[in-house]
Image 1: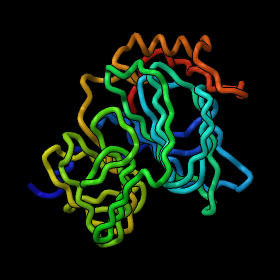
Image 2: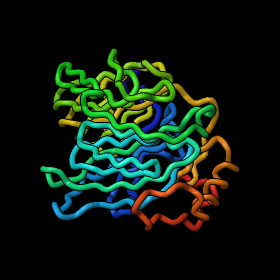
Image 3: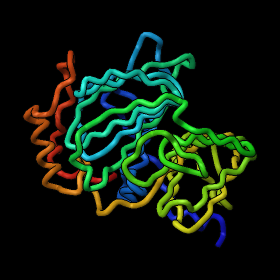
Length: 298
């Protein structure tokens, strides 16, 4: 097998915009591939310059049936939710919010010393037995994220277990999520440790055999293949995957569920403002016109 045939599918991320106006690259979900392991959503936020006196505000909005993982490379954020949580997040730290039967949260992002906002938000679908669990929020400082340094590749294991290291972040199914910073000329080995794996190039360029992977590319890897990625330029890569869930998941707006009917109920609950509230916040993101129907994948 040639190296590039280890790539099952390569998809360029599409451009999107968060409700607060921040440009993002959205790698999942796609019509060609809706999930990788339990991961159903991958957004790269920025890098975007931001004046020191300005912030990006994502107004209160709801979720069900998933966990969100917020991880910043640059800048800082402030998370608030209907549980009463108020939590700042800095680069290298992890915010893990589990929506379960329903939660509402808002996000505010500001530039750090670099003058930019830069990070990723990922959604993980919950196993069916946990889809309606009580909502929760957990913050982890950078010490919870083990770092592996080897031959020009520095990998931070954000969640789950990867390459012999295990994050202290509590997960709900077998998965891994990591950030690898690859020096020019170095090689990143992505071993077949899980049934489903993907890598997403945040910045820089990698080469797998004769195939070039550039910023914004999501590469889904064949299940039995070890993949060697050579750093053409210095690159930042997100690695993610795990065991597939028990059955398919549907997505409608911010809701994830194994039941289409549950999605319709969540949409009506938000339309009627039956979710919890965030103390001190009255504005919110309304349900989109088509929010009661499952999303059409781009």
